[in-house]
Image (cartoon, rainbow, N blue to C red; front, top):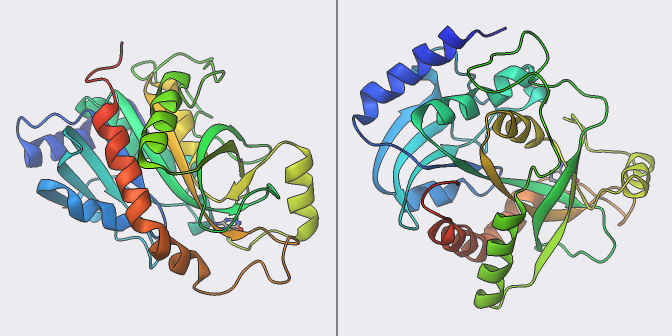
Length: 278
Ligand code: HPA
């Protein structure tokens, strides 16, 4: 379990690397969309392994470093790769970098992931704006002694994916001529893909897309008062909807196909976000 001192120690290391650069927005890049980090101007790279207490990604498709610089006219802190609970990390470790971003001054977060489509109206390659999330039985990053420097014990989760930011994303997509889905992200731990029965259950319970990440970061970000925008890149139809839900390499292949649109949407949204959260 971490105390505030752990977070401060990590943030001090990052501050020493970036000098007086103060990021406004944390951008978390999920499976297959890490290339967006390559578009950051005047980048400063800090591998996760150099930051005390920071968990290091074990997934091959995740590079595992922070990139500080400018993107879409904003000062950003980009996570090129993230860690997951299925890698053996606790929910608190998965959420760790979000609290570092807060200490460095980020008022907002854009979170992205690859996900399976659960909603029958969706198609492989669609992009879904996340309107809300469902986490039923899994661990939680806020379990344990509350750290009041980040927020109160009881955290309101009624507007996690900030309505104001979702309106900005819809407009950005509309201006690009991009059809944007909007729906609920349903979390399963993984690492195995779901069974058809689990997917049916997720659909009945209100899920539109299914994935193994994101919710811990958004819980921690909500707790410390950050505004959030989230996107799922729908890389496959979920189990039971097609003959084989999981074809090795499909997640990366679909991400590759959609990457230019996805990149433009995220950059456009960044440029439209307010300079500071009110
Ligand atoms: N299930 C869970 N996670 C995923 C999927 C899926 O079908 N596709 C991409 N990430």
